Amino acid sequence: MYEFLRRDAKVAVSYRLQFFFQIASVLSVSITFFFLSFMLRQVEGGIRSLEGYGGRYFGFVLIGIAFSSYLDAALRMFAQAVRQAQMTGTLEAMLATRTPVGAVVAGSALYTLAFTTARAALFLGFGSLLLEHQRLHWEAWPGAALVLGLTVAATLALGVFSAGFIVWFKQGDPVTGAIAGLSWLLSGILYPKEIFPAGVQRLADLLPMTHTLKAMRLALLTGADVSAFSGSLVFLAAFAGVGIPLSLAWFRFAVGRARRAGSLASY
Amino acid sequence: MSAAWAVELRGLGKRYRLPRRGREWLKPWRPRRHQEALAGVDLAVAPGELVALLGPNGAGKTTLLKILAGLVSADAGEARVHGADVARDPELGRARVGYVLTDERSFFWRLTVRDNLRFFAGLEGLFGAEAAARVEYTARLLGLGELLDRRFNALSAGQKQRVALARGLLADPPVLVFDEVTRALDPGRAEQVRRLVRELIVERQGRAVLFATHDLAEARAIADRVVLLSGGKVACEGPFDAVEAEVRAVFRAEAEAEEGALSAILQEAR
Image 1 (cartoon, rainbow over the protein chains, first blue to last red):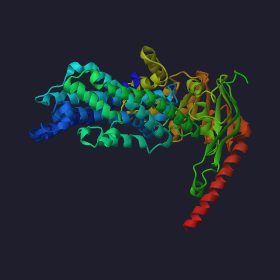
Image 2 (image 1 turned 180 degrees about the vertical axis):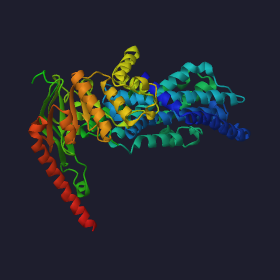
Image 3 (image 1 turned 90 degrees about the vertical axis):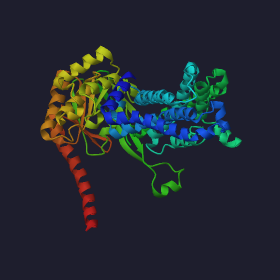
Image 4 (image 1 turned 90 degrees about the horizontal axis):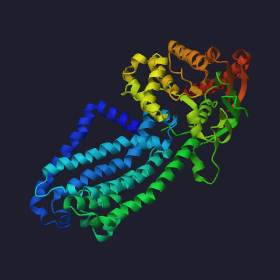
């Protein structure tokens, strides 16, 4: 795994300008939402759905942005790793080695996971400098780390499922677009999900990101302990517990099928 | 079966399912059409022997090599490498067979030669000092010692080919397979690759090599023995001079068939 991380870090740093812009985008997005929340300042006291998260929009959206970028990356990274290696021609060379297919795919996605985690941390770090009348409760980090770990497990299950589609069908992955779209719409990334009718909120509760954001906001914006968001932790753990074995079984099936069809490395 | 053979294939078969087209989609319960890539291939390669796998396009050469390398699963028969059936256990195939890909796109262009080789050494289970030593050794063996810290995209075509050979030797496999590796090279570079394979990998290191090509002159120059695949079967095998007439007849028939199709296209175009 370390070899994959080393390879991708070296490749990423070799594209210096792109690397710089990826970091710079964190700052510009944070500042953009800071000014949006600045505009909302006069009315945010009256937004009841924000009350449970400290009452301020910037803190609310900061957590949403930091961890939604995480969701997008986790959903896409495996499929992207497979697709990119198929297109550049490196996949067949990797698959001809002793390393199993699953490890090649997991390793190829590792840098994206690490970079996105660092990017989320940068969002929180830089955003916390812009927070007014509110602070991030860093002392709640054990609960936040637990949420993050379970979020990784839950979203990786979806990511592996998506990679199976790419291995078999090469294109037309139906998973990431649907989950990412529904998450952006319903799970409370930019606005509280409580603004929706009860039926829609119940649908939102089926998405892992809804529980991630709720738990993260309670931990980091209000300093709540784990018991305050234990329901979300149970949901994420159950999602991962069921999703990971299913997605791995699906991925193995897709690889076996591609191997029989002789299309493992083709695109 | 004898473990004395480096490679031994018995009745190796592979059929690819063809995609449905047109009206076939209206009757999805009907069995799909298949294309037979390998139809019971028997073949053996001794340690230290270089066998050229000859055949026109679509003869089944690539499928055969990919089964040995664990990239494609077989439908029937056995593919033994030093006694172990890699058709049943593709992981063994990947451990015992070096599939030499000389396509320059199979490398990471923005990394140095050393980083590329270190990465692939890691995938072969070599890490730390062991990987570093193996990379140094194979690079020096192929005259790449001075180029280790140069970016892959700064190498000449011939140097890239040598890096590809070095990659194939990293895991020290007893069997190496080459799939039309000289196809895109100029005659001088192709000759360099042939000499490295023949003199270094086979004669000096005693590895068994299956070298797929459709170039008859190349097969004559490099191989101890040739095996001609046609329509997924072994049409003939033996020293090149002994089977040359048969080989040429198969290639001629193939060319004539294509000539007929080409004439029809040109006539229609007129």
